[in-house]
Length: 281
Image (cartoon, rainbow, N blue to C red):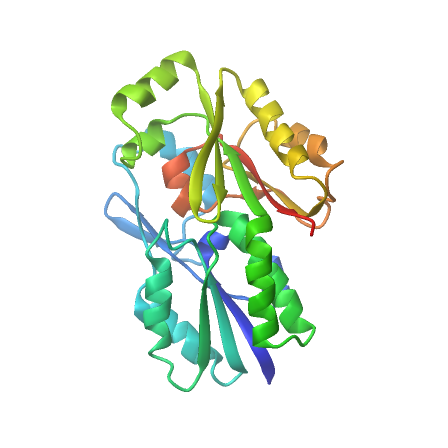
């Protein structure tokens, strides 16, 4: 029996092959548009990410997102009860989603299992890197307290930066005004955003994609030596060129560019580009 099992939600963007190799359980969120609801995974009930981003610009209605139910989490925990003594559930930032509270409620449905629910204070592969590091530590035989301490130490070193192609999808979600989004569209402004410790911080605006990419590279360089680095995108152009520019900062060979979850993509839109970096100790 494994001593510690790692669980997360699908917004972590941990690639499926990595999750399978490290025995990570992923609980899918949901996205809905039209009259249909889809799981955020690659199952028959899921919606392919390439299909989603191709359709997004022409969707007449704004896609809506939903967290898994407490029952979904409870089922996932109970399924692990015969395999492990303890579960560490590392969840998307509680300041950005209700997922954390639901994951805690779900733990009450598995009374025979010790469950630790952790607020990652991150999204996409910022969360994903914590999940992967925790699963690697569990595979090495680390105890739950050791892994929980490692995650807390890691949090301030994790940074997600992203360039949005437009503010239109943020506007649809009610995050910015119509006037601001329209002005940004007319001026072709590309906002640069950061997620750190649960906060979303604007790191600047540029008038072209080229300048936005240069700004992203500057931000990564400013972090100093890196332990881990992932390229994030929502089917952005010039992806390979951007990835090659980052090769000097950290090896990207073990993780291909990550297509961002539809749950986040519904709010940032297509053609976005970003990174999830873990600064070295």
